[in-house]
Length: 148
Image (cartoon, rainbow, N blue to C red; front, side, top):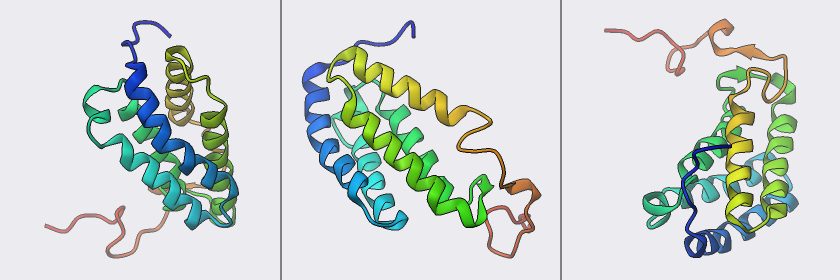
């Protein structure tokens, strides 16, 4: 990790204060939709002032956490019967790693970088499933061909 912007530790402390309870809820949530709600709320905090304006890494966190959320939408890969289990695994891993993260500039930068890299990998979250381009589409599906 090189060329990372400095992290405002005071701003990070305020962000952590908002995110930690949500990540604890992720770890005890009972089903994928409930846990998804906690992660979406955490991601939403990334878009709030002053974080999205001044805290390095929140844009990347938003994208990473929403990539996990996309598993439940079958986007871009549909995992069929394994969907909820894969999403729960990734939600909980992200939450546990967040809670275990050292509350330092390096700790935050490492977390952001690790998740940004993880969700960008072709093998994430798991091999298998049917890519959106291989699935049959139905009218109204986001993959359906557009009509002029």
